Figure (tube, rainbow, N blue to C red):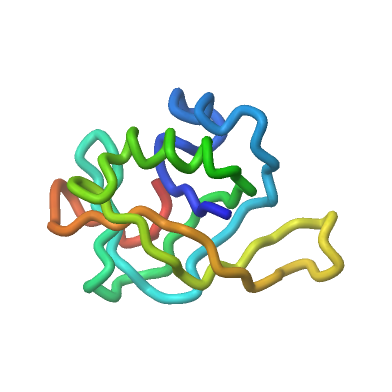
Length: 118
């Protein structure tokens, strides 16, 4: 599973890379991180500002490899596991805690987005 918070979300151009992947629902990080925006979003792991809001998808290895290429993992963004809360009416629970991949960036760029929403 992968948590996306920027141009991979529905309504953005890079979401096409997730075609064929199962959308599990809108979600937020359990922990607090920092979201910066400079045309594209960057989440910084080492700063605790707010929860980050996005979406979760169930992806196969081929799709994950495509996302890694887009994100430049591990040389640009770095993919790591994080605790994510997913909201999905199709699940038994309205909110379910899962572990999912998230792409972190190593340094600040652009303006801080205190709301955690890109």
